[in-house]
Length: 222
Image (cartoon, rainbow, N blue to C red; front, side, top):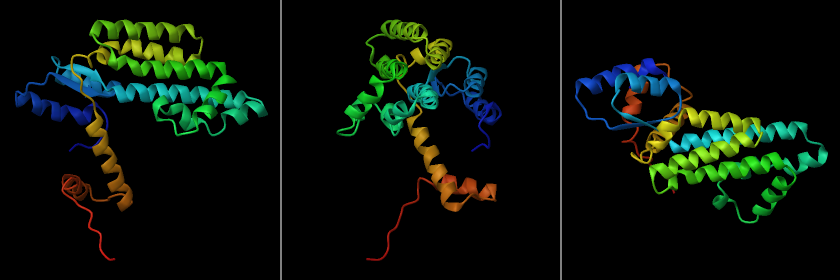
């Protein structure tokens, strides 16, 4: 257990890993510079794998930024088409609720930049299903070129970020790992804190975290 979200919180743990002579081949993390710089420092021989969930999350954030910008600039008719479409845009196409595909298509039809950005986001999801690392690299570079050529500020920014982090993204082909389990644990911790409205005693909170996975809900009454 360590308090904090930056490199300083990770360093003591990484030092113990080195002293234990653990053979770490790869580490999954998000694209936060604080995390991957600490990993490079503490485990220089390990491959960094940027979690694919966080890459798509970033794409969704850029898409949502674009939606908000278009909604601010739209006339009354345009705002009507965009209203209530946020979660439809962020969902994967295969997860759209029944009957909502037409509503999404209508919003996209009247907003060309949003249409382009949405299909770029959906296409990016195909990156991790490529058959070889070389194919994955070509796919990513082709996607970045499309995003840069789109002229959409948010997609251009995303393409530049992905190019900078390309090595870690492509390492997924060699080490298909993610931070999915960790995200689940983080969610449990957030729920624990919310149920207690926070903990003033740090030591007690740490004990609660250690016991978190042993706890079971007991329902009483009829």
